[in-house]
Amino acid sequence: MGYEDLAANLRGELLTPASAEYDETRAVFNAMIDKRPAAMAMCVDATDVQTCVNYARENGVTLAVRGGGHNAGGLGSVDDGLVIDLSQMRGIRVDPKTNQVRVQGGCRWGDVDHAAHAYGLAIPSGIISTTGCGGLTLGGGLGHLTRNCGLTIDNLLEADVVLADGSMVVAGPDENTDLYWAIRGGGGNFGVVTSFLFQAHPVHTIFGGPTLWNLDRTEEIMKWYRDFILSAPEELTGFFAFLTVPPAPPFPEHLHMQPMCGVVWCYSGKDLDKAEELFAPVRALEPDLYGVQNMPFPMLNSAFDGLYPPGHQWYWRADFFNEISDESIVEHAKWGRKLPTMQSTMHMYPIDGKAHRVGDTDTPWAYRDANWAAVIVGVDPEPSRKDELRDWAVGYYDAVHPHSSGGAYVNFMMEEGQERVQASYRHNYERLSQIKAKYDPGNLFRVNQNIQPKG
Ligand SMILES: Cc1cc2nc3c(=O)[nH]c(=O)nc-3n(C[C@H](O)[C@H](O)[C@H](O)COP(=O)(O)OP(=O)(O)OC[C@H]3O[C@@H](n4cnc5c(N)ncnc54)[C@H](O)[C@@H]3O)c2cc1C
Image (cartoon, rainbow, N blue to C red):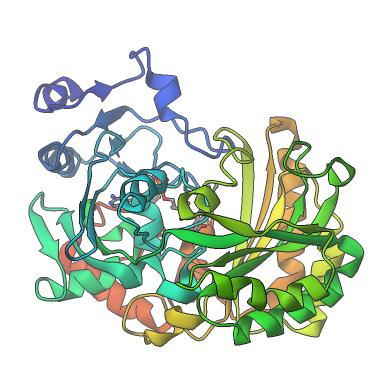
């Protein structure tokens, strides 16, 4: 059966290299990745997804699944194979009686924020609204609400999954419980999720934004921050960052283009009047920029969107950390000074609080004991600078990795090999591998941080 037959059996369009939209559609968020699929199925419903899965399996075609296309290693696409593109499947239904939100597999977090905010609700996600719900959720999901509401997977109630044999099942606490366990962190290894059901939280207006300091104070601020955040109320999340102040309002002109260290905060507690009080120790440190204020949650969740449009070069490295040691802070300060470009950054996300109340075998997320997930990313629009971005990210990573917990958050990794995948799932890899053998023995879903089927 050829691609013409597949096209005839789909309700959505099948794009091939002959299609006018081919180049625009095949582009993923990271322009360092340039894959040329044989075909991209713009699926409009679960039946289209099933048709594609059956086609790929029966014809020995390599299959990739694309949600928001944000993956660092471009794992939402594949050379010469078939891409199941979910971007046409972006329906959302909020149930105000239960605060549960049904989200189709191709939604982006901006879609969810928009729909849920109207009901005074939010689902813990990341920090950029253009990221796909599919990939972010299946890998774990951390961001502005982690300490208050847990990881995204901790709020996943059930999912509709198209399996490798083309059947559709529900994975939840009462049905296919092994699959339900595996998809809460195990990535796209087990099937295509066409719909997620999330528990949302009453989060509407938050008190948040950045506080920034001169880079000369990195060691002082980082030492203060590591102690402060771990003992702060769980309603407060704040990630440490190196960043360059964008040359535009609302940033004051005298700070434009200055590399700085800082924290991006989100207080999502009910009593916003309490927030100012909580920030007294922050103000006492006299930040050069104090940008925290009341704002709608979707505003904070999209605050970085403009700084990071699609189509830039991205080189990523990541690690979990149990602690931020004094020795590692010396390295951070050194590499923070070497930010190669304006958009390059390092984020250190706290993953304690509510996320620590789930056991380290309750989901595949094996680092419930770690306090931080760090990501180092070299970013720039200019393709000729890609080696510079890579050298900085790898050099920085090599310097701090010896102080890490061993593995990394899979969603912050590029394609770094099996050893790194196994280090990231640690003691949960064996169980994931058994469940993979049950649901996808032929490893049809292998364009991902791959879990190899047992045996
Ligand atoms: C600018 C930027 C900001 C980010 N910020 C955060 C953050 O704050 N917090 C965080 O946790 N992560 C963050 N990430 C990382 C993000 O979680 C990963 O890149 C994730 O893979 C993106 O998901 P996606 O659906 O957009 O990606 P895609 O490239 O479309 O897919 C990624 C992987 O997920 C699989 N997949 C996607 N959807 C489905 C589905 N419905 N069913 C089955 N498999 C699926 C794909 O097959 C692929 O293997 C960020 C990434 C970027 C580029």
